[in-house]
Structure formats: C-alpha cells, structure tokens
Length: 236
Length: 236
Image 1 (cartoon, each protein chain N blue to C red):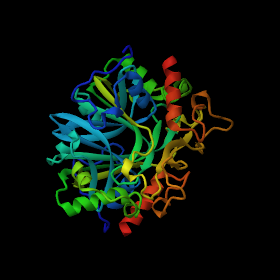
Image 2 (cartoon, rainbow over the protein chains, first blue to last red):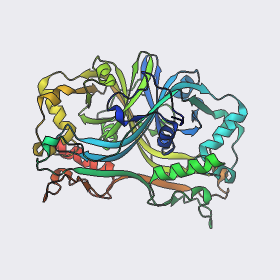
Image 3 (tube, chains in turn yellow, purple):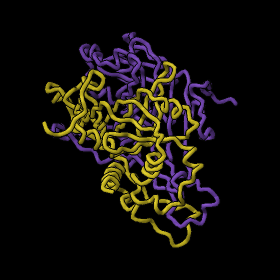
Image 4 (cartoon, helix red, strand yellow):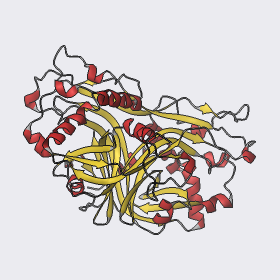
C-alpha cells in the first residue's frame, strides 16, 4: 500500500462492523474537510467535556480557536489528550426488523495532544486561515485584525497522531429470512444544504458577494462547498 | 420562575457569551429532540473518547444503545461520567472583520452518570423506543425482535444531572466603527433536510410508506420531522 495512512492502535482501531473502518489520510481528511463543525472532547478534573467547535486542517494538523479566557482553551493550552470527531448524517435506513434499522453516515475520529500556538507568525497565519479556509481570499477584503483581537483569541493545534474513519453508505441490510415481511423498506437521504443568503440590513449599497462566497450557492450541499473551499485554500 | 430548569454548577455554566446560554428543560429538550445524532464523550484509562451515537429522550433521561460487545458500551455499563452533546449548525455569519465572523447554532450539553439498563421490561421497552421514537408506531409493523437480538444489544441510560443550551440565532455583530468597510455582510442559512425516499430493491410489490414515515416529507427539515415524531411518540 503506497497511500499514506494513520497508524492503528487499540485506541483508534474500528472494532464494531470493522469493514466500515479505514485509516488512510485521503478518507479521514475528506470527512474532516467536508465539515465546519467538530466535537472536541477532553478531560478536566476527571470529567469528560465535549465542545462543538469550528475546526480546520492543514496536512495532518487540526486547528481551532477560541477566546483566550475560555475554560476549554486555557485547559487545552496546557497540552492534553483530545479526541476530535466530525460526523455527517447521510440517511435513515428503514429495515424489516428494529435490529437492522440503521443510518448512513461518515465520521472521522482523531486522537492527539493539543498545543497552544505561541509563535506570533503562525498564530496570525492561522487566524487568517480561520476565515480564508472557509471563504478563500476573504480576509484581504476585511477590516484588518487588530493586536487586541489577536491577544483576545487563542489558537489551538493538534497533530493527528491516530485517526479512523467510519462510513456506512448503502441500502437496507435485512436478514434474508425476513425478506417476505410486508413493511416499507428503504433509505431516506439526509443532506445539509445552504439557503439563500440574507444580506445584513447594514450592507452598504451596491455591494455584492465576492469570489470568496461563490462556492456557497443556494441549495448546494454544505459538505461539497466546504470540500471545494478547502481545495481552493490549500492550492493557495 | 416556575418553569423547570437544570441546576447550574461550574460544570455546565455557560461562561463565554453567557447571554447565549440557558438551562430550562424546554430549551434543552427542544434541541435534543430535534436531533437523532449526538456525541457521547467519556474517559477510558485517562483518554477522552467521543462516539457519535443515535440518542433518544424520555423526560430527563437520555437513552442510547449499541452492541453488547462494543468497547464504549461495556465501559459505559460500569457507570461513568459522560457528556452528551447535540449541535445543529444553522448559518454562516459573514462580518466585516475576521473576529466578528461567527455561526448560528443550537447546542445542548448534558452531564450525568451512565447506567446499563438491566431490567428486562425496561430494556425491551427502550429497544422498541429506539425505533418508535423516530418512526411512531413502526415497531408494530416489523418482524418482532428476537431474544438473540435483545442479548446482542445493550441499552445505556443517563439521567441528565446538569445541562445547558447555547444558541446563536441572529444577524451579523459587526463593531460599530467598521460600518463603512465595504464588504458583503450577512448570513448564509444552513439546514439539514430530507431527500426523496429510495425504496429497497427488495421492497415487496404494492407496499407504500405508512403513517410511521409520514413526517419524513421530502424537502422537509430533519429537525422539524424529529421534533414532530418525538411529540407523537411522547403522546403515546
């Protein structure tokens, strides 16, 4: 196998329905890049916490940011084990038995140790990435970031040490002997889509959306728009 | 205040942008009931794990299920602290500064101690709820659950000891002094919607979707369909 993969350990090995699991960078990163929202789990005084957070990726590094004063950020800045999860619900799977009901989904689970980004240049670059990764080129059109804003914001990074992807993307998995049971069976697809933009009442007259927002076409799937903006951003 | 609320402690108090936080049952349960997918966080040997899971609610009790053999389930069956989070992304908020970019969202964070459901009657009732809460009345039309399936599945419950909701649902929050900066500002709504059902190739001829699936109208928002089915199910 020449493609790059994350190492597999007891921590990230997909045990249940293991044929749904994979570890290669392309699959894991594809799931991450199709999302804006992740769930970051960590332990504080023995208690698990899970914080929904905007994340972005560069190579095998995940980034997120928050108020320098937040409990989560101050804790993660000390360098702790974290588990960062992205999941997409893709469909409701209706079978002939309760047991075979399921869902179609794509999820990525990443393990690593968090770090505070302390280098001023890397920090500034990542604060810009927090906008430009989602809206490529937008930061150049914005009011520039101020030193106070840089100070008020902390950037956390986590090198992905281990990761796994888990995907179910198929039809109903009924037991063969249930085949004559008379009930509707099938899949109801689920997608997350973009709506028509609502301009701010404070929008200056004559201003239209720029190229930075071109991927966000009304009716389009959010995951596809995000995958596209990641590609545009990564190309530079 | 006569409405019921979850108690507030340092664990669940919303500190950052605290005006977005609330603790009343109605708000927290409304966010939970609009979702099928939650993220369950727990600690195993000091390591945080976060598992995307289907959850359902009865009163202040959360339920989920899994293979009796799964690592998560066997650990949670021992009775551990967990943090269960539901989040809905509702919009992308584009401001005149990177700092004021944001997202509209609804999230609920629930803390409690997990328990294995051991009473056979409660377990069976909850295995049925796992179908009927989402597709009211469907279990009566299915091939009945077998003793082997009951044995292979574990049901976990968690009384919500503390919870908080956090909601952002508004327009752009630009700084006043940025008002003349010439860039498009506004909100791009995000919704998760149902697609047209795809019948299984093994569907018996002449069978149509029943009342259990009536709320899942193509094009409808998933959160609204789930809120409706929870209401129908809770009414009995």
